[in-house]
Image 1 (cartoon, chains in turn orange, red):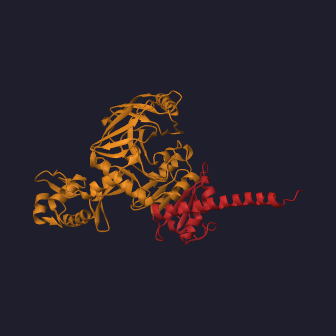
Image 2 (cartoon, rainbow over the protein chains, first blue to last red):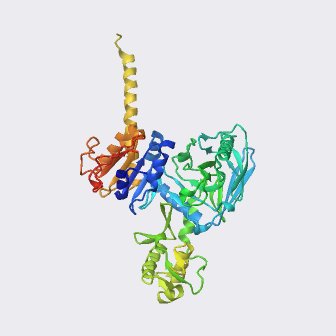
Image 3 (cartoon, helix red, strand yellow):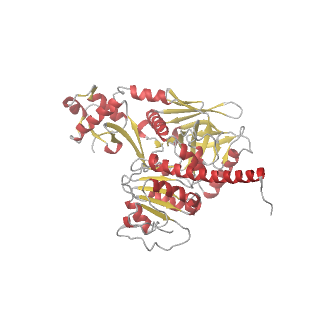
Length: 381
Length: 119
């Protein structure tokens, strides 16, 4: 429990800088600060352990670039139903991990550097990630970047095998820090009865171009450019359901990541413009709205930025924003939102017949766009 | 005592200058980093009320943070923070093992003072 004075301050300040040191000693109070109710639009930056290297990276991190790539990667993850991650084991053989995604039903998380109102963020910034349903994770992956506590050298890579989301096997040089780490975790989990220590918890993409050298500190390594990380263990901190004693990030170098039909990373290199272009040039989505259904706007999932309507990502007190199409589409969606709000809940075909067009877009098109992003609810409010 | 002359003296001064430069560079880097945090990450404005929660691990960086805050008129001086009612920044230093409640925190009007809480 936090001291009374601190509780009162947290409850009424608009910005929090949480600069407590790292380690088990402060873990409880750091978590308590994060979980303590704060004003709705307050921002919290969390730097677990200020150090020269943290500040050195922060001082030169291109926040605007990270924000842009974080948003596009979030959009790409939100659009995808299947991720295929290709890495190479120490012997050169290709490893493939298939991860089923649930499109916008399972929102991605952004760590873009900018801490949006109502959100908190880690420093240094630079990743976008999601927590897929573990049952849809199958195949192999080579972890050759870092594990908590150790950056890996060439030849230290360990090939992990997942079956229905559970890590069932790993192989690699027995002296590798990654191999030793997993053996230690397995023994600890057996001793502590930590049953889900080895369940797939996260797929993340590093986006900070300043972080190029891995250190064994997950706070840095998961943000490193040209990397992908997965995590095993707990993801309840992100509002998901895998409960374990620890959340362990494992980093892979130079992976290729395919989302449905498009490659987001090739050998670690991000393909941002391609996805940005795909988003901005899309003028419609497949009709998904059931005929005759009553619809309502899910207010928490959208917000205005200037005159454009954006999709708000909000989960576990983390907030992010993605554009739902071109700037013009965003403007027309904002107009539609204003109109729709006057109805509350309405059969969408009735709405479309009364307000058939917003700019160059038909109401049908925009309503289907909103539904595609799960910003439109169906049925009772 | 041996007096340093010529090259030896230059070397010594050079080392000293280097050390000073390193310290100056580091302090500036700390200030810049906190500046990025305040301006670009958190977009802090003069209307915000900022709470800083820290412990002894912040000591080497305290000056850089307070400089960055001062530059933004968020915190005029570090030393008298407990007494400045106009301050818009609270500093909360947490110390392990001490259970004393902060005696000076005005519960009814938390905006008037700085928190110095313990756990």
